[in-house]
Structures are given as structure tokens and as C-alpha cells.
Image (cartoon, rainbow, N blue to C red; front, top):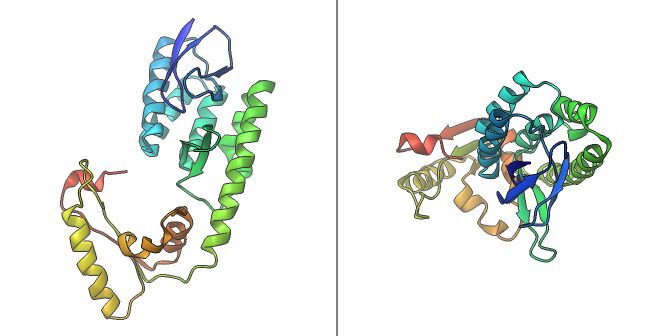
Length: 234
């Protein structure tokens, strides 16, 4: 029997040998499992999934790639790379209490055309494959909605990229500086995306379509930071 962390909530799962799908006793999510016949690989998965649950998708991707370098037929590693590419974060639905996907890294490419998704299906067993396909359909619908909204947005000239709050939840000096820059550029006639102001009327709705539209239309990105760690923030 192997010990594995739930990829949704981080709860501990006890996995029998050769199991490819399990249900978490903590969040109730039915989920696909990696090949856990190696302790080193299990530890790599725990690290990678920890990063992915915290939206540190690039760090997670590097570890999943490492896993595939050692075991190129692990369907779960390919699927995990898909989750990282589309920035999938699983959040609890307040009504059903089920974990549902949200897309933080929208792409113009459909998930169905993603090479890692195709590899995941290729190496998955039938039970895993059905779950991957169901998840992919949900992600594809979310992404279609994001693209539909983003295509209606007016293009931006400048996108200001900065860290809004520190680890204590307080407003950063970066945010204050970005605010001054926003007003200066706006007064000069530029259409500027500054999250604190641009998204203030979007409370209660998903921000991703508007961020995606701005990122893809802006001619210039200004990256502003007062500390090295702020540049590395998710």
C-alpha cells in the first residue's frame, strides 16, 4: 500500500498497489492516480502536486517533466502537464461542495488538441481515460466562455504587471507606484490595464477573461516590482 496526497485538497490517500483511480475521504473527489511503484516517484508527485495546488504551475511542470524522463508512459504525468498549461485550480463549489476546475491560464489552443492530453489518453486505462475525457470537456467549456468574453473587450495599450498584496494581505508599495503610473499614462491618452482599477467593477465574476483579453491586446507590458521576491510571485 502507498501513501499519496490528494491532488485536489492535499488530504492523505492510502492507495492499494495497481490502483489507477481513487476517491478522497476528505473532499470526496474521484481522481486518477499516477504509477506509484517507486518511492522516489511518489515523493516527486507530492512535491509537484503541492506546487500545482498553490498555482505555482511552472515549478510543478518541471517536476512532471522529470517524472516523464524516467517513466514515459505515466498517463497521470501527462495529464498533470495539461493542468499546468491551462492553470487549472480546483475550487470547492459552495452549493455542491464538489471540487470544480477553474482556468487561470487560458489558451487559444483547445485542450483536445494538446499533445500532452493526447498522450494521457494513449497511456491511460479505460477508467482513467473516462475521467480525463470528462475533465477535459469541463475545462474546454470554461475556456470557450473565457474566449467569448475576451473577444468582446476593447484592446489595451499598456498592461501593468505588479503584486497587489504581500504575504500578510496588505497592499504593497508596488501597488501604490502602479496606481500612480496608471493615472499618468491614462492622462496621456493611453488605455491601461491596472488590475486594482480595471477589475473593480468585475467583483463576483471571473477575472480571467478580462486579464486574458488585456494580455493579448496590449502593445506593452510594464513589469513593476520593489523586491526580488515580488517578481517571483505567482
